[in-house]
Amino acid sequence: MRKRCPSVLKTKCGKTHVQQTPPSLSRQELLDRAERGQLVLRDMRSADLNQVVQIEFNAQLSPWGRISFEESLTRQHTCRVLLLGEKVVAYHVVCAIADELHVLNVVAALQLQGLGLGHRLMQDIVEITEAQRLAKIFLEVRASNHVAQNLYAQWQFNQIAIRKQYYRPNKDGLREDALIFVRTMGNQIRIPG
Image 1 (cartoon, rainbow, N blue to C red):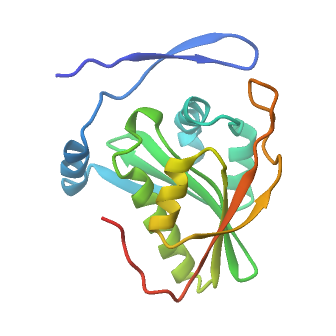
Image 2: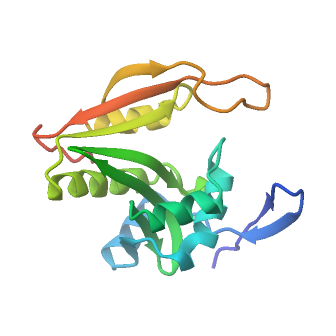
């Protein structure tokens, strides 16, 4: 049995919380659990928000606060979580505007990144877009986030614009550019493997 490693989470008011993180998983172990039905995608619920916010603060440079997630749930954005057993391991938030789907947030737990969870979330986003018969999917990503850019390229997204100095200042006081990506639907769907 693997030990759980504690992680330290600092809140904005300076309090420190030690959280237990899921044990490390290999890609094959994650796939095996998925085949056994232990990896489940479902709509996000208010009861998930403690786990979602913890993942958000551990994985994002400019994390959403709890209120942003609560507003997304009440605005009826499509908010989905990926569960491993009862534990939230990834999530996305999207909203439809006219004939477009806008990806507002896509995150996998930091310690589980690189195991294919992002692909599962992207597959769900494409399926939502198809089900609603929307024409395009838009998203933005930090210029420095090459891993996410590679994921989006595998899902047939193309960069169409740059928003200069879009993100909040980082620890060095610099604002980072956002790259705007789009995928036009109707393309032959190719699920990356």
